[in-house]
Length: 419
Image 1: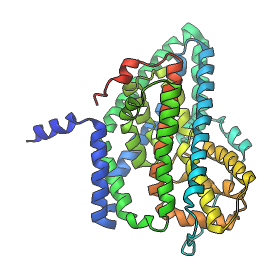
Image 2: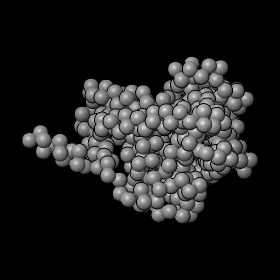
Image 3: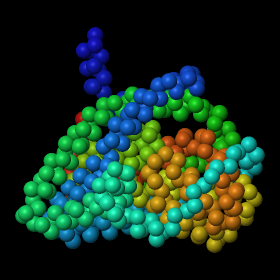
Image 4: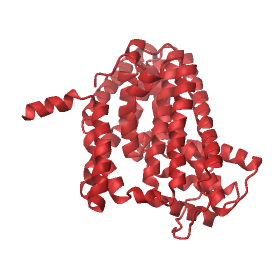
């Protein structure tokens, strides 16, 4: 009996098992209620397993990807193209956020009387953000999980391996072997994904429940519709179909594993090991591109965050009766772009960066703290939605750059994934 059960379980494609767990978790949490916190430890254990892999995967795969590029000029080409596509997708997300915010008016008539103001950290200047990218101690940066500093050192180290020539080849080979081993470890950890996703979604549903949407129903609809629209129109049609000249169906079919993990964990960084695996094994993106772009994208390319912060700016203005003009909209676009780049890839981080954007449209610090206090109790459900376009954008950009740079295995891309 157990053999038949195990055979059936492992015979089902992983993304289908994760999707089934997501639906079952929502149902279980709804009927179980607040007591569902008893199984949250299962979800926390899964998150710890994949977060355990984040730092070594960022350093090893990024260094290995750069070291595998024979021509240093190609590294510059990959970086420039990825950066331009990141700007394009972020701009698309902000535009969709503005349009939906204006059309749906999610903040109109919202009562903020029951909200508890939250203390907001002062915004970090762009100069301080740029300086902090260079680590004083790379080992300390890895211990602290400072992703941007790790990325900087990995790029520098990989470039040094290239410049070392033949003498650096043993290091390049070792990095490539370590990268393969880490992706193998990711495959093992992902077998626990259905159980972790079930527990996390059940916990969110059991503690927040559908009633959490009543007071922010308009905003929730705008966030979910905006994320879906952005993934289909900007990341799917514009980036994958038009710019990469590839069919959209294999792309969306093959990245479901990563999307489900992103949705349940609400963290682009935690999803990175899975994102790398589906990029190479399902989409056919070669390591030189996948390992170079995806770690960077998980940190600086936050399409869902940009869309959400834009919506929150309009939501706040509508809730407080602040009239916006063309200059206000332009400032929202500019500051949201900067904030989304600086946002930490962890749950609810974007909420505490709102003060910068809200300040440019006349929202006082006290009002910003009130907005955060109003959204925070049920932000997890909104955060789950906006994390999915974050990682989808990283994969769409990586796929497009891989196609342009002839670093894409088309047979793998068109084939159905086996796991």
